[in-house]
View 1 (tube, rainbow, N blue to C red):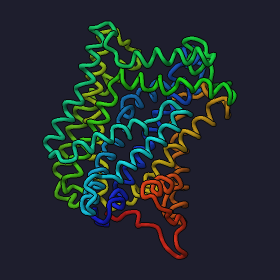
View 2: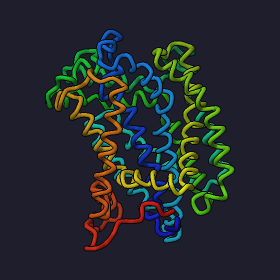
View 3: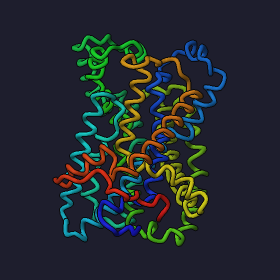
View 4: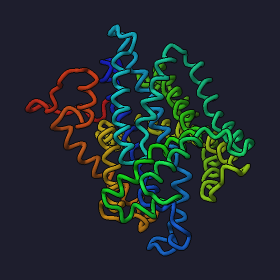
Length: 421
């Protein structure tokens, strides 16, 4: 498949879909820390779990190797996909990228709805920051990479500013105060933790508890400088999409190997420092918060880039391409599967479902995450042999194009080849 087929077909390159699938698994692994409530368990409650002996090691490995890396990889893929879509739009004469703007607005709507049910949503932030890509679409690769480097440093400067001003410069503070007012209005006890409410919540309590969720979420995003981090990866992805990497990956083998080696050499130790500080519960009013932010900046992006390079290098090997291609259907239905993961998390761990929150540690939730993802891979493959798009992707695409599109495949038609480049 040529990367210059059509604007939307370019985002359907199997190697990108496979990478999206891998990123989805990594994101779910980390999100389960919130769904299971493990983040808020006391040391005594953690020690009482059946997997308590191995949970500390499993939890550290997740913090070290997964936390932040896979949403960063997904952000990079978003920017890369935009570069390919923009190429197609310019060839069609859509210099204003009206269709891409509609895509972002629809994604924002999906994210807003998702936020109502789970405050961990990332779609709305992606949509809002996606408009920044339009503003820099004419920048060359060097300018994009320089800007991304600056953006990755900004959260560190923000952490220092928050510390030096005693929290007065915290951009998330007003939203945090508003969230507490909403909780009080909704009858949620002050400073209530998820474990205090969600394990036994009925639908009424769950909805009331979620009212302040978006405010808490964006307070945290602003306080930690997450928009800077996501936009930085967008710009790196956009710069990569401007290159001929996807058209001629073999010519980039040496570069990919350097990115892999350097990313691992820098990212692994820095991410270990961040994991240790995160697990220790570093407060924002401690100077160690600056060290934690610096370790995050120096660890997450290099390791995410190393993961991406490793995937592209493995894709050049026929045996690994066949294995990774199994993840492509899940990545092709990334929106559907991402939101489905939230549904699984809520219905498994909250009181509106099985109410298992507080009973599952990292060692067990890793097994759970792989089992859910394996089911999503199988279900996505089954679906795409019968239908042209994922269900939510179909809605998204129709709203973007403003026309009704056929969902079911024609009789005898096969899905796209899973391992083509």
